[in-house]
Length: 171
Image 1 (cartoon, rainbow, N blue to C red):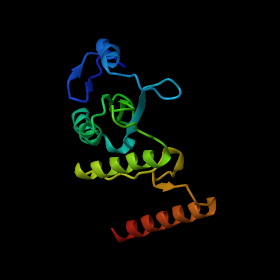
Image 2 (image 1 turned 30 degrees about the horizontal axis):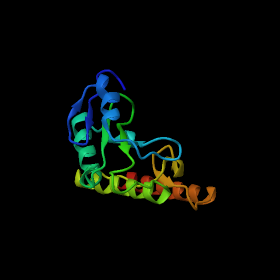
Image 3 (image 1 turned 135 degrees about the vertical axis):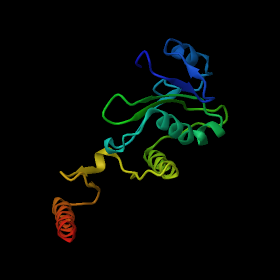
């Protein structure tokens, strides 16, 4: 973490960066995963084109994390806006004392969909796709790659270019 990063806990308390490890140590981390970890590191990001401000980003992540807070999961989070795309780092405790989180592919997709739903509340439009499943054209059109052949992708790009040319002539 950068020295000036604003780190918050699940109760929205500001945690000084030098106290982060101490805060994590205070969590009851007896229930560990097979790899020895008791917490998971999640990164939630926005497309570069969205230009989300830091205060908006913190309001978003607080809303995004509400389901975890309501069920008693402990976590820390920080926003990064200094890079090209606004993103968060979340350290999430895997157990709330009664149940353990299982973050496999279906659950991660549910988290992506939750991000899209929360973004709608803020008036932002997003897609719930994995970075690996995206194809970016020169026009920045995002096309999910899953189940698409190169020929299908090219056809979609040509349709987009044709629509843009038609739209340009109508103006």
